[in-house]
Length: 165
Ligand code: ADP
Ligand code: MG
Image (cartoon, rainbow, N blue to C red; front, side, top):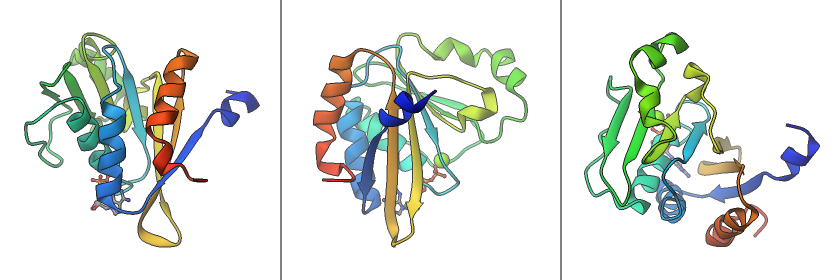
């Protein structure tokens, strides 16, 4: 990750949980089998809110309960949706021992909260952070690897939330 990578960050701002859900839904509609989306940011940053939006965009209609002790919850959508919350993972080894890697980079889209707990890598990273000027605003910074055309599609789809819009 050099200076070029930094330049490639796509930056967005939402002003409410509903807007974060809407951004997620728009992006979720573009997700493909094999995608691994890492969600980073502090507790309460909005990772789970965004994950629910992504699921909706993927056509998941099931309820998505709030934090449980499940490390991974699968959902059925247009493609399988695997929602990981690794907050309670003590040791990266556990991830592989539990066979959770089977759900990453395969037939569905994997969305991972606290990916550092398993030292996971993805093709998309979304970092969420609170804004100083409002309790309900979030900065959402997206980096991705892959074809330029896909990046362009994502940029077009998310344009309304651009930080500098
Ligand atoms: P995380 O999974 O990162 O720990 P959650 O998504 O569970 O965080 O919680 C985010 C909290 O912040 C929720 O209570 C949500 O209502 C609140 N919130 C306020 N503004 C926003 C916003 N713009 N986007 C997402 N969540 C927001
Ligand atoms: Mg969460």
